[in-house]
Length: 478
Image (tube, one colour):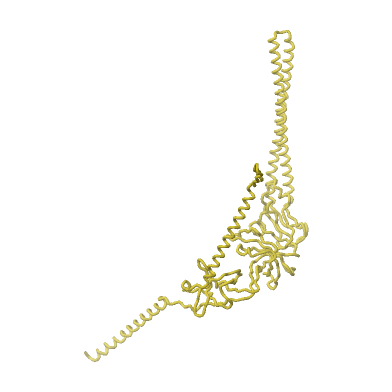
């Protein structure tokens, strides 16, 4: 082979080798990246959060939002005549309403109710009255005709008696049998006369009762129609006194508006509040309601006046809960009296309420996140030097962020706020306290059971008769 051909062959082989090296490097890179992203790596535990057990004052607070209302107000209700059940106006719509917050004088227009509803009832009542009047007139005519026929029957019976008497008188010289027959005919005529008179009196009484019943029905319909006419002219609602108009809430806890309905059972449209004394209406969930008592102090913030903070006091706690709209949760109504300068406050302003339900001057407490639970116990993750243990704790009251520790840890102890992968393998300390807590729970359960049995026994005792043995006999009392 010539030198020229050898150079040509070497020149062609050099690019081929470079491609092979590049291809191999690419494959190695892909495998390395795949291993980095796909093969699981050991998780790091460098994100543990540690807290310490603190000692100091501790407040138990319940947070809620509420709405300002006047303690005293004059209600604006539908007229009394509309609440008359005989009118049978079950519901009536509001067709016009002044703007909420309008200041009105006594006698000013506040709302208008649906005239069409009352108009339809009036038309129906007039037709009913006309029908009852016709019944009344028919009853009088029927009674007159029926009694007239009965009077004719009495006259005929009287004539029969007279005729039989004449026959008997004329048969005085006849045979005893004829006289006897004449006497029997006379007695029969008298009995018939007595029956007709008795029947007449009975029908007269029946006719009188029937006519009186229809007359009473006519008077009732007339009275109802008169009241309906009065009601028709009372559909414009006026303010009873001067004040600011505040709408009330209906049964669905929505504010009254045009199109809302009022009824004899829910007659209030709006109120005219006395702005010199205010309170906040709030609703507390069933979990926290047991903590609330009358007389507890409250700090109130006004959302519309962020720089204003007021003091208050719980003065009413509902005994019966009510469901929240569109929710299964139950809430209880709580009323909070507002103290201090309230001239800037307006009804319906939103309040942020902090209710102080309990206070400790000196106690141990930890963050609520430091408490862990399993099926049987509650514990904390306590750091003891280089070790970590599960320490059983006896907990007390808690607030939104912290919980009191009655026993189990000491001030300054370090606790983990984050769980650990090996938490099931950690050793447990404080089993003596755990058994003590279990024994305490069992004792409380037993005492509650005994108290319930005593209540049942006393209840049964009240319903059972008492027996007294006096030696010779037993006397039952009750």
